[in-house]
Image 1 (cartoon, rainbow, N blue to C red):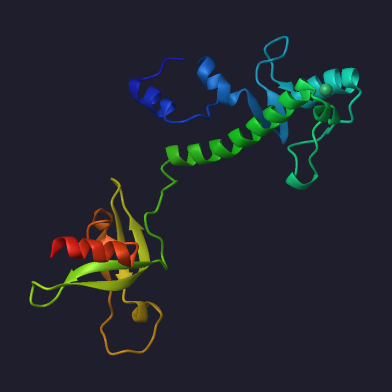
Image 2: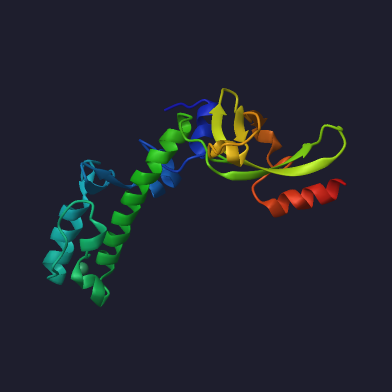
Length: 210
Ligand SMILES: [Zn+2]
């Protein structure tokens, strides 16, 4: 498989791959879940994936250790016990346990890495309903003061553009008061400059500026 530089850079940013290329990628992708069962990739006689239960449990621990072993699919947290020979130091049972964990982790991580690659996964610096404190200027264009606001709305556009609609808390809670509807939009870049997630940070910033 020939990759462009851009494709190689995308591969470097993630740990899960289908199919994996090279030994480093195999580290994170050898144990995998298919149809709810754990497989070891390309470990069969003809390079096929082999089922971990069939290979390890039946051929090794059950046969050689005489162990009572778990024989099912990806386990439920509340009822999972590895081969009971694991309690007496059987390394195959430990390997088996680690491989199940690795396959389970890989499946979950792949879900998020795929979403991130498709630009569907976005970390929001602020979420709707969150209180923030802004530094604003009074009508005299000189005096700075701190105001509490509530994030009402987050909007996202192309090229990483993100802005937040911040509201007066009373307005956000729909309380009757004699003020105008407060729906100013603030850009993401203002966080840490004129929008703060704690009152203390806003006070420090205001003190530093006056
Ligand atoms: Zn064993």
